[in-house]
Structures are given as structure tokens and as C-alpha cells.
Length: 183
Image (cartoon, rainbow, N blue to C red; front, side):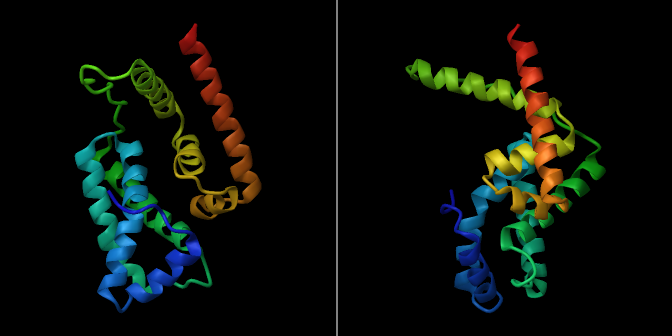
């Protein structure tokens, strides 16, 4: 696994250095890997496809790095745009939206709380996959990847108010789905 995601200002500095230094590029890779892999995994559900898309992301990022302008857009917003475009291309090519995966076999002796947490995650993931792509994306960016409303707006190419409304509607839809499943 990679390092924790650095603040955007640090990522910008690293990206500038990565244009000319292999070591900085490796640090950038380490910092971004978990976040980018998670973005893909939560969308395609299959580890192999998430790995392929993550690899494709880094190739595209390296190719486009020379054109990155730190003064124009936050680095993570720029990265998420690359990832989003790759995901859209993937969906177009495969014409597949994958159902949520079943909880993996739990090893013996695992604490009951951990099992319950896995079950809750599976229920949330299943509910998330029933939402529209925009609702999934706003929930993923805001709550799973931890982007601010402003950063989410930049990534999704929407206004801040549009993201707030989209988030409100997405959460309302999630509550409705989860309420129906608990009955």
C-alpha cells in the first residue's frame, strides 16, 4: 500500500518536481496509489480491473504531467479528472456495470464487531451501486475519498451549489434505499 495522501499543495510541489525527477515521480505514485485504486475499485468492483485502470491512470498522468498547470487547478482535481475519463472509457468499452461483490470468506476467530462492520459495508456498497452514476460519484468523492465540496465541484465540473444539491439528493436516495432494505 502507498503512503497517506498528501495535502494538495504538497502534491503540486511534488508534481512539479516529478516532471524532471524520477524520485519525485515515485513519491507521487506512492502518495496517490491508494486513493486512485479506491476510486476505481468502488466503481468496478473487481480488483483486477481496478488494478488495470490504476495502471492506465498512472501512464496517462505521466504523459499529461508536462501539461499540468498548478495555478489553474488543484492537483487532485486534475488527477480525478484523468481517472474519471478513464472510467468513462472503460464503461463505454465494456458496457458493463458490475453488481456489488459478496462479503469475502471471513477467517475463523474474527471478532463479531468486525463481521458486523463488513456486513454493514456490504449493505452500503450494494445501496451505493443502485444509485445513478452522478450520485455514486458525489458520495465516493465526498465521503470515501474525503474531498471538499469545492474540490468535488472542480472534479465533477459543476458549481459548488450543484454539488451540494447533488449530495443532498444522493444521501436522501441512500436513506430511502437503506430504509427499504431494513424493513
